[in-house]
Image 1 (cartoon, one colour):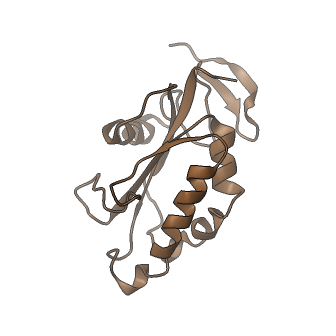
Image 2: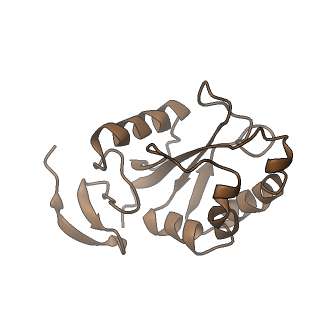
Length: 169
C-alpha cells in the first residue's frame, strides 16, 4: 500500500543478568534461529547486527544490561506477522525469564523512505519521542499505529483500513 515507505522498529530490553550468566543460558541459543526466521520472513528488509550476526554486543546505552533490536519491514502487517504469528513467540512469551518488565517506552515504530536504513540514534530518538508525546505519526506502537501519510490506522488491521483522516502537520 505504501511502496515508497518501509516500517522501521526499535525495541529494547534490560537483561536480568549478563549475557554470559547461567540465567541467560536458555535465551542465547534462541537468538540465531529467531534472526534466521526474521531474515526469511515475508516483508523483512534489514536488521541491526554486528559482525557476529546479532545485536547482543551492540551497546546503545550506557547501561550494558540493555539489549537493542532494530529492523526494517515492508509494512506493519509483515512485522506483526513475524512478531505474533511465528516461532518468534517462543522467546517473546518467555521474555520475563530473562528481561525486566519495561517501565518505559521500549518499542517504537516509524516510517522511513524505502531504501534507507535507520541509525541507532534514529531509534533512540524515536523511543524518546514516544516517551515524551505518546504515539504520533513520528513514533508509534502496534496498539496505536499511523500510516506514512500521518493517518491513524486501525490497530487490528494495520494499513488496510484508516480510521480517521491524517493529522495536521
